[in-house]
Amino acid sequence: MAVCGSGPEMVEAVAREAPELILAPMLKTAIPAEIYNRLLCLIVHPGVRGDRGPSSLDWAIMNDEKAWGVTILEASEEFDAGPIWTSPEFALDSEPPRKSSLYRGPVTEAALCGVLEAIARLESGEHLSGLWRPETLSEAMNHARGRLRPPMKQADRAIDWSHDTSAAIIRKIRAADSAPGVLSSLLGVDCFLYGAHEEERLKGSPGQIVARRDDAICVGTVDGAVWISHLKMKSSAEMKDAICRMAQTGLGCGPCAEAFCAAAGIKLPAAQVLGPLLHGVADRPLPIDAPVDHRTFREIVYREEEGVGYLTFDFYNGAMSADQCQRLRDAFLYARSRPTKVIALLGGRDFWSNGIHLNAIEASADPAMESWRNINAMNDLVHEVINTMSQIVIAGLRGNAGAGGAILALAADHVFARPSVILNPHYRGMGELYGSEYWTYLLPKRVGREMALELTQSCQPLGAQTAKRIGFLDDIFGEDVETFEQELAQRAAALARDPSYVTTIVEKLKRRLEDEFTKPLADHRAEELARMRVNFFGPNPAYHEARRRFVFKGAPPARPSSHPTPALQSRAEGSAAKAQSATDQRRRRPAIASPSFMQGALRRVFARLNAAFAK
Image 1: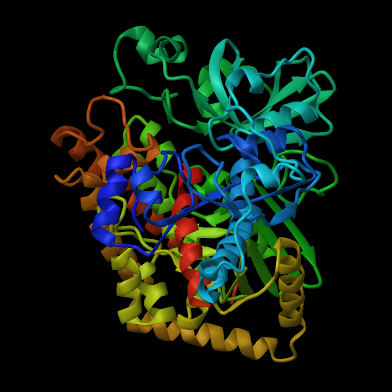
Image 2: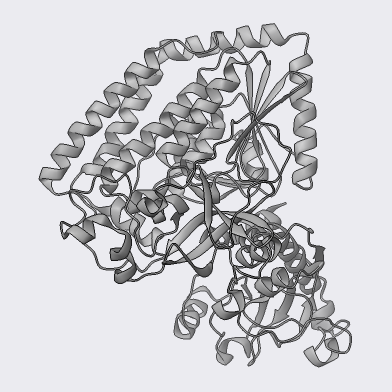
């Protein structure tokens, strides 16, 4: 696989790799004629037959299409106008999807089917022999419903708070999620809006922020209200200065006492961006076990059924800040205190978890210290899952998982996933980050020491089929999210009813004690964190630089280095040591409760592209 940003780079890559077929799953730059005139170049376009233009999915969501598709076509002089090989379609839910969710789910699945069909035509020889030929665009337009669509601009997405209904606002935001967002103004601040959720009970004046919950904000509309979970302040020094109290004093970021600054150009939880401007806005928390009886915004939900406690957590793009980790840990401890026999952990439909929250870390006043706080909060959560001796714990991966989020799943007794799930159980790509979350205990225990090193060193995506084969996953099932949830519930209920349940719990406790005797969890944690401390506070800024490139999509703005000076490093390490000591004390407290190859290769290609939507 080659990632090319220009025509010359494509020419160079073709000369180097000498391919027989070129597949372009996400084409933003035209393939040079000297390539497509010599080699077959198939392009994956996320639109129905005859559809053309760079904003295909945006228009499909905005126009409330009932079905959409993916077209596999040949490269030509005009974008999306080459001969059409195939165009599989799929139904769209009445609930408008996020554009990134649509891309990761139905679009990727349809693209896989279309590419495999095109390759089958090549392998059968029917294309080369002339028994079959692709359909020209002019032929397709006699019956196709697609058309040339212009690039969607912010003017097309603009929200009119005084006229747009909640449904219209949600559709606009989801058609732009996770990029480019919808530009609007809240409390006088120009921001891009992301993460829209319907609210059925709260109401307020159109455009007025009426409530907050878990760092999301609720904004009134003409017929109710909508929740906005994330904002990105428009990149403008003037806008940042308008809401940054330290900027107003002229002291700069160094002595800032705020947990996070509202950094321009970084997508963050809404309340963190608006900060002090939300003073006086009512906090409307919901207990995690409150009935799910109306539409609203909730990151963590707990319910019980047939002896099983279902703890669902859905964090935007799978990123988990220190505060979110702590909230999830508290929720897990509550679930563990309940008289259930099984706890089923369910991450989001798009992502199970992607580990620490790099955007929140980058926006903090001290990224090194916030990195330390975040990784320790992740460790605290994983520690509690590992040490649950009162229930069987299931991890149900409905969506992808990466870095510490993938390791979090391994803390459970059983790990199940959908067949389309992609795992990235490694850290090194983020500036040689060593990683923690007890991976040195959990990963070798699952896949063996040799495979654990290969997974963490190679930094390659891992498909569900392969993950099951090597023991990372216990099983994969479910054609879609709904069938996966149904079968997982059946398996969880069966474990709760199993006559040998008590024996299973006793054996679980025995294994944990044997492992602890061999090497205590505290030793794994200490060794991992010693390496992480060097990543965060040491002389090599590779992690900080890689994080900034990730957060700013390869083009970080000029700013003072986030890598701490020796004085700041000494102060941060002292704080880190205190935080570690407090963590160790918490851990000593009693627990709440006592004792096919081609398809896989293509999935990995699409997984790399899907990563762009996780920023």
